[in-house]
Length: 223
Image (cartoon, rainbow, N blue to C red):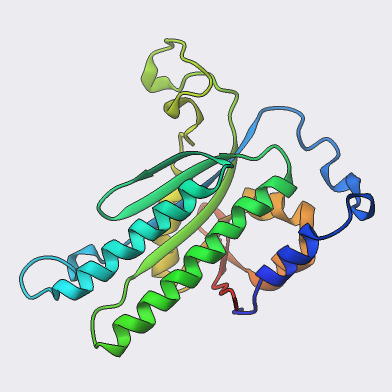
């Protein structure tokens, strides 16, 4: 489960364009625009603040969140990046699985960083960061959701492209409950599989929930 996905990504990106099977992207940019959302949730924020909390632990937590946000902002594919006391999230326009794969790589880097921070916290006998990292894909045509009462807005408006079901946030919480920190929605798994089915299948385990199927993993980069 902890085999590196980075080498597979690099190998795919280094391919000559003429050697790539273009059928993998055929028709996938048609229909409604697709967006990918990454949601990083800290589920034990109370362990780092308040009475008895170690100030150094809170500094490390804040550093992890800051580095996560900076990394996501550096990715030009992300058109929305926001953060709060206990989360960071981003939204990227992903018209094809090939683009979605490059965005998905961010979740691997975040999970690798989380692993490093937690190793440092463990060495100092401090609370570990219970972080959940989710990756979802959804369609949106840019029209308004119900809470805007039908008032038209620009297609690039933040609320226009947000998943109305807040799936990414929900999965970021569940991933911690299920131990493995990374979780893909069913749609995200299928979307990425159109680009590299073998790798996605090898790195993520299918989990059945009452209301659907998700895929759990713990992928760490070796670089």
